[in-house]
Image 1 (cartoon, rainbow, N blue to C red):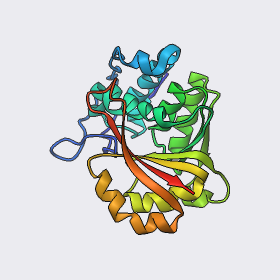
Image 2: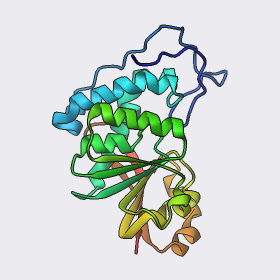
Image 3: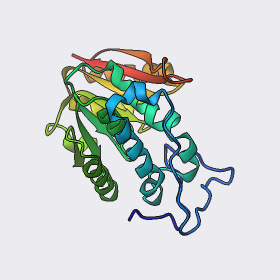
Length: 239
């Protein structure tokens, strides 16, 4: 039986606080149901849509009780979170290895792995409670292309690397590059989910990117065919 929310949970980087700065209380025994998948989800997840729906159910239930998302995020799980993350897989070449830094609730790593069975995804997360949750969800969904690694990105430099390293709402690009680019294989890419600040962050990070052997960077939009507001990413290429 999944845990139920019994106390007030603080918002996370993926949540939306109320005017008072906290999410509303979910009464003991009250369950939040994940919204139905929109028609566009079938275009992203194909024959794995049922698994994506089960993942959404986990987010709406124990994702809240574990403090991974706020209750107010449940009605917008698909557009703002699951699909918003999954569509960035469109810039990833077939058979690529991927590291998701600061995975938290599996955003974007689990969404990418659900959308693309050909990708090998490692979820990097420092908090034990979150890694335990992630492993529980992976086991329940039977995902064979995902592994969990507990630790901070900077602690794993020289231990793991991938063709693509990605992150969502973790830090400004200059700091994120210092954490993530050492995990990117030569010729690989950092794919950072960003918003309207993307161009400004690239400009502010120019010196750091040059020092970390970045060959260039660009801003791209993903998911224009399935999302009302496409996902903005910064792609940094490594020499």
